[in-house]
Amino acid sequence: MTKSHHKLIIIGSGPAAWTAAIYAARAELKPLVLAGEQSGGQLMLTTKVENYPGFADGVMGQDLMAAMRQQAEKLGVEIIDQNATALSVIGSQFSVVSSGSTGFQSIGLEPANRQPTNRKQKTLPDFAWTKSRRAGENGKQITAKAVILATGASAITLKLPGEDRLMGRGVGTCAVCDAPFYKGKDTVFIIGGGDSAIEEAMEISKFASNIIVLVRKDSMRASPIMQKRIELAQNIKIWYRSEAIELLGDKRLEKVKVNKDGIIAEFSADGLFYAIGHKPATEWLKGSGVEVDKNGYISTQSSVLGSPPAGAWSASDWRAGRLSDLGRSVVGQSVTETDELKTGKLESENRKQRTDNLFPTMTSISGIFAAGDCVDFRYRQAIVAAGFGAMAALDCQRWLESQ
Image (cartoon, rainbow, N blue to C red; front, side):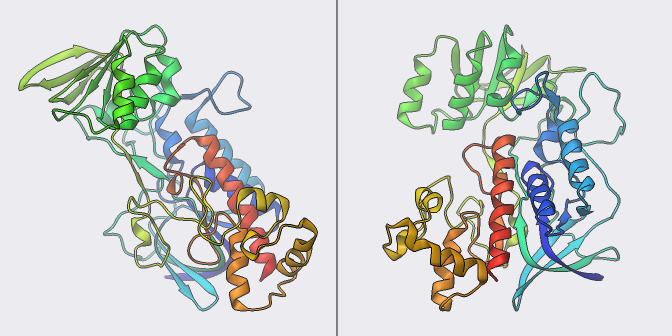
């Protein structure tokens, strides 16, 4: 196992990771990116992306991720295409153990209008982590002064026959992202019984003629207000006691085989979306001390996704320079605090813990930050992840300056 030391390690390979790397490189932090053996994030599972700013004609998901990586490389970012398997604190530093081959392998779906470059390509989630993997001959132990976790999350699917082959070709995991592509289409299936399923169905019902929601049980687990909303929709049907058992089609999805009340039949379909949840790629953090919530999403000091913890700065306080946990309301009084933060002259360890709340993307461990879909349980959009990555890099830069 080889060893090395860096000022900053960024773990992940989606929009959050590459944006963080670009910002960190421009700040002379000389980041190392552990991109994982399957690089690119969930955008590798999509075809055309039309809601990412700057691309008037849209951009293929794989091309967008390749461009982000190339931009990071151009700025001198060092990249290792290995999986992180362990994270620990060693004194005032952090240790990350990685394992896997070192060859770059971009794995995802080839768009339908391209010839596949690799016939063995599979659909894989952002920053795939293998529980049984151990650091072997090519393993590395890397120490750093700071870490940014941007390992993403993957949509939960049922692994139905035909799913891998048709993912991105009529089968998807984000109706909000792809709904406009179904304008004028006839039938789209949604799998799920919660609020997310209803939200997905409502969104795509604006474009397709008939939406069928497959619910495995006798009732939905969605909130009453959401169920009432879907009952008012004219073109949405709920099929209870129904399960998709196979996805059929050659170049794209054509039919869905459904078991409805014990009767198996095939139904024509233009699309099918999973809406049964997401799983953040954070299992490998067990034992690291990084706090995650009950669903595995990483908790940060002052998440924009929820209420900040007691004693933390609010968003308005952070912008205005007010230190709310010290009861200060005059912006001018915060100048001393800011100067102390930049020069590292903190009065005490207790004081230092409070100033950690200056960094919204910091995790439960000072010096470890998190961004993207491993934190974001609400929006799950590429542009949001990229913004998170920029926030984490800026927070990390300012935190390092304070040490």
